[in-house]
Length: 263
Image 1 (cartoon, rainbow, N blue to C red):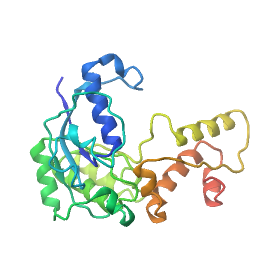
Image 2 (cartoon, helix red, strand yellow):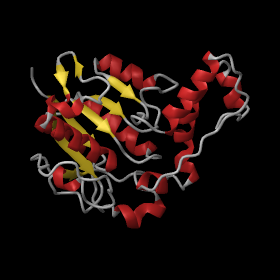
Image 3 (cartoon, helix red, strand yellow):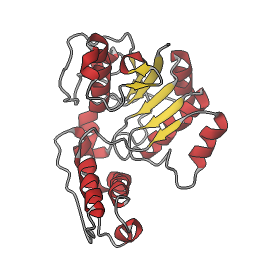
Image 4 (cartoon, helix red, strand yellow):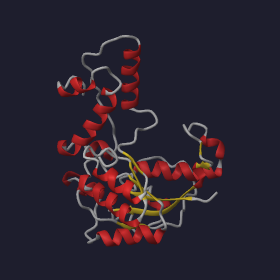
């Protein structure tokens, strides 16, 4: 079988984990045993090939993807010695991808990057799937890349909480359906984090006949994602996404959300 050609948008900690995970699985396939679905339709993790990488940080642009994942402000640990991919990180448009209070941390470039530039880059790379991992609150930037992937004829996986695949108006779903392209998302859960633990507990309570009148979770973290979310406006879609994930394990999700008894 052939390779799955993937383009990454946002070369942060999540991208570092994905890139290193793929490279590690090629070197030692036994390391994939903890992955939920080790084989999908005959494809395995090692079949993923990174062909495109886009970021806005001057420390990452122009570097090999395998080197850029260790540039600041990334803090995900090194899992493998050799990470070269042969793919150089290119500049994407900043748009709303960097919060004002994060500009000294992310160090965005000052270049003009157009839709045509990105569509051309996707086509030239041969990317079949674009994976979006921009910071929370990147509403405009996420829609930009969803449109770019669509124009370039690539599938789009949205790994952050902007409602594209779950667009309540159905506009994005219709566009991708019409183009015959896959669209997945939004806001991918980590393997084991606060939301999956919270929703598992509330689902268990429902199964055991317990009525949940009110519940909330507090997320504590030390990476740029949490620093980014200090700006309340950027947190709105994230909160809605996480609240919905937990609420729908209970009997009366709409009421709990409306009365703010689930947070």
